[in-house]
Image (cartoon, rainbow, N blue to C red):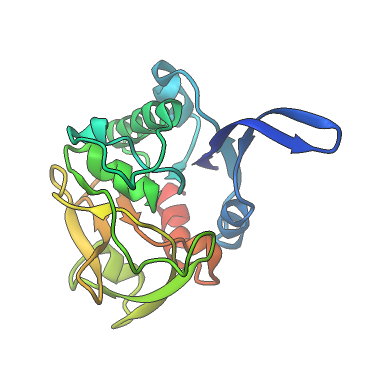
Amino acid sequence: MIGVSTYLDPSVRWGVWHLPAALLPAGYPRLVRAAGGLTAMVPPDDPAHAAEVVARLDGVVVAGGPDVAPERYGAAREERTGPPAPERDAWELALIEAALSSGTPLLGICRGMQLMNVALGGTLIQHMDGHTEGIGAFGTHTVKPVPGTLYESIVPDASTDVPTYHHQAVDRLGRDLMVSAYAEDGTIEAVELPGPPWALGVQWHPEMGEDTRVMAALVRAAS
């Protein structure tokens, strides 16, 4: 059972309803299913409950989403940084801490990788260009694994084209994290802990592609 964090949207319309909603793009459960797992949606909640929630899961995915509040890593907000999502920041930081403390396998995707870095004391680049195809359009670029890393053991290809959509990235690495993949422009594209616990973050969006290897590795670790 793989728990995937969700958006919390204050106003969503479907049918005759216009209500707050916990949302998760369908690509996430589709990818978990294709990798051999089952998905539980994990919407923002009281951070005090995070350890109890993680204890009921076999693996945790912190999904993509809004920018991490720069106040979380001691930086001033820049002009192109997106609006804050304080409930989600607090909840997902608590999920990450609970997963690491309990040894529950953890995968961070895009924002999830950035938040893993922040949780461990790292910082972020608040804006960069060239990693999308425009507003609402995923791009594709090449990532290369770092030899000897967990990521390279999962995806041993010399290079891989991945679906990407982000304008922020890891700057200073968090405590104990190591880089496990780079983009051709030098952007950090994957980070991991030497482990245990099993903890990997990828900057791209595997749920938007057909390559199940990263998620399948999480499912194997979880089982």
